[in-house]
Image 1 (tube, helix red, strand yellow):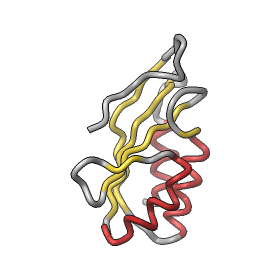
Image 2 (tube, helix red, strand yellow):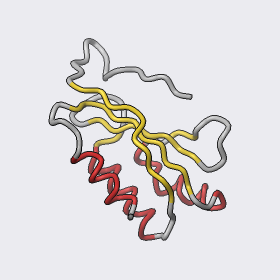
Image 3 (cartoon, rainbow, N blue to C red):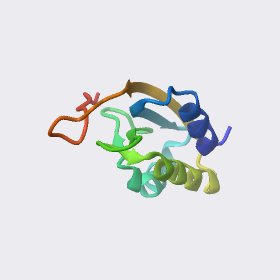
Length: 110
């Protein structure tokens, strides 16, 4: 399945009050790491510590840390267009977060 479509379906499965989601993206070809990093840069991805083929990125529905969902989906569509394949895994979902003097929740990175 295309990464953008998989992302879209993952968001569609969430309750309407989701506020923050964290995804991991593991590339099938680690030689595409730099190209994938370039296409995904607007989504504020981070390299997963100790991994040569894995990124993590966050998506926020309304406000907070992470990319806006349509932007993240557009970045993943660019990977699809470039035939860069991988596995997208939903790591964490937060619902109904109401920031108090901050942009959103601070999630630990591994």
